[in-house]
Image: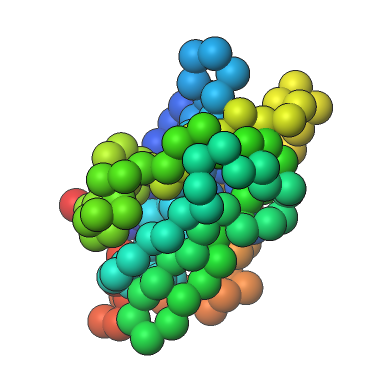
Length: 153
């Protein structure tokens, strides 16, 4: 699925208010990563500093810090759980987030506290695209602006 030239792969869940995607993994883990829209907003990412593996994160709390062009932002989790692993490749080479946000650029893998209770809060397919379209409108996002560091084919 594409929106304003940005990719939003089918098969993932999305938390538009956090600009994150979620992927269910075998054994009940959930992988989180920044969406293409999040990458477009941040621009080039220079550092990702995650919380330590084993750390418990409450919903809406930071699982790490993303540093980009003269600023930093907390990456907030849309769900509560324990961090099982952070992506060490991204810690060493944060540009992987920009280069392959849905693949090698994943950020953390978590074990949610109660996945069954929160799974339905996340969006898929057309619902996700509609929610991102609304966010882009509210953010005055202009994909044709030369300053936008969007991921493009």
